[in-house]
Image (cartoon, rainbow, N blue to C red; front, side):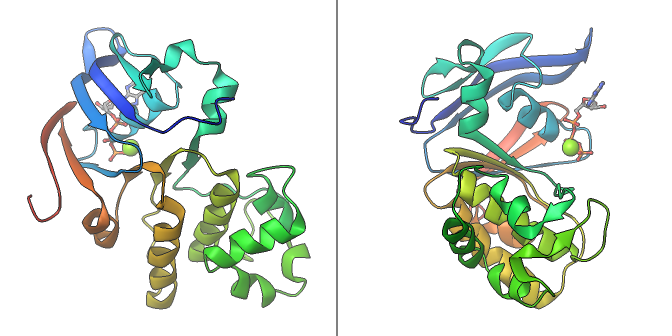
Length: 230
Ligand code: ATP
Ligand code: MG
């Protein structure tokens, strides 16, 4: 791994097409300084997920390049990229096992104390302690022991433990009660602090708090600026 990366992310005139002749990204240039939070917004099909897909190297650009700290991500091993670029998906992934295991998945050598610390930092500790077996409570992949909001907080704890320099967040769209919503907002601040983040944001509060809002349309950036500017 490259433990010392800063987390500057650059898209240099990136063109990408899933199918020949039908570009999903038509020359994206974006310069993100380490520590900045970016909200990607735009209509369905505008290219938000595609930007994320390239940053994770699920695909490579057809033209142009994506670099982190000035290094083309094609020149970095997948393992080291995975350790530096973390992703929290919309359908927050929970597997069958204990709550503890689910959080520990962020960093397999984490101690129990570190797990509790991460859970506390993102306001997940209290609901975990209210479950029948606390951190040893068994959850199922498709089970409904946990609400959407709780799943989200759990995935934040996992991401915090993994501590990547660059964090990608595909925010859940599910409606969440006000109390959990406030917890999520506060947990997000903790989670984003000191990292570069790319968020496919659905909550207005997340968009408002981003350092830079990037508006996409048909594979192009049509506007960018802060919430006040736009
Ligand atoms: P949404 O808000 O619906 O998630 P999005 O902004 O994330 O939309 P993308 O998924 O990046 O949009 O899609 C950009 C373009 O690429 C669209 O025209 C879409 O149809 C196309 N596309 C996306 N994924 C694929 C794929 N796997 N194969 C072929 N075309 C795809
Ligand atoms: Mg998408």
